[in-house]
Length: 435
Image 1 (cartoon, rainbow, N blue to C red):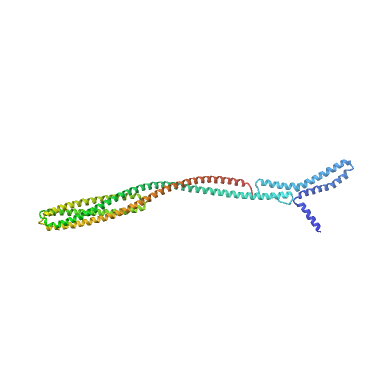
Image 2 (spheres, one colour):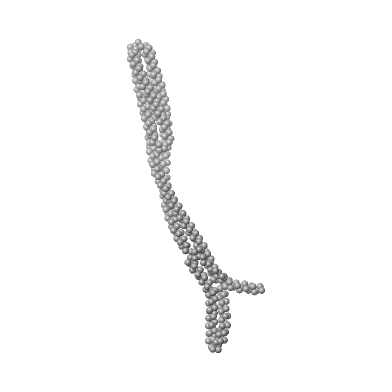
């Protein structure tokens, strides 16, 4: 029993194995021959008496061949041709783009293997087409996205390029303004030196005036000691002393003016120091402040000259007063009082002159500070000018880099367009496949 089952399995293996088609054809040939033998025997039996032996053999062979041919043709049609036509139809369908065609595999013979291989090939090709289509879609999408990104990038680069051009222009203007500011700062520095010289001159004049006032006080003391000799020109002495009082009032006014100018000069010097600290585009204010300081210094110098002139006139009048008082013996007491008043006025003048000296010293110190700040400002402005020049050069390099980036973006945009067209073309080619 087991032997029969093993034989059956072996027989089925032969009929359905990888090379079963050959065995099937052998069986068909053997079957056709076996089927042809009875027919041949029947013909020989019925026709043997009519034909001789040789002709009968030919007829038998012909009949056997015809029967075998018909049987083989029918079996071949059923086993091979029909199945091959299915493979051919599926191949044509796939060739027309329909990758859904599937061949039913009925056996594992050569045609079955061909059909199975065809199905595997179609499945693989379908997967390739799907992946290619997906890839083409992704490439097209990425290309469109890249195109849009490049367009946005190009727009941004263009805006940046325009902004950089404006910055370059502004940087050049800033560099020019910095150079102009540097020139004005140097001019202001020179003017401040002139003001410092003038302030020193005012201080010197004030010191000389103070010395002369002290000398005047000594002379007045001398006059007081000689008032007993004044007899004849008391009236002239009174007039002279009155004139001296008027001149003293003028001196007081001039001293007040000088004091006011000194205070304004100090305030302007402070403003100049503040403006120097800013050192921005308001640098032009340095020239204005310097000009105001120069004017005030000139007025101070003029006032000092007036003081000296008035003091000289006072000394002259005092001398005349002394001469007149020497003649005014009858009004010695009145003359003495007048001289005392004159001495008091001279003391006030000395005090005023001392105040002028102190103010001049303060202004001189302030001018020294202003000069130092001006030097610092000039150095800062020089650094700003150098930095502005470097910034302008760097920005120009940035502008050149942006131009190169813009050119690269154009090339990328062109490549993205070509890539998008290629992907769309690939999708068009793939769309003819039915998957």
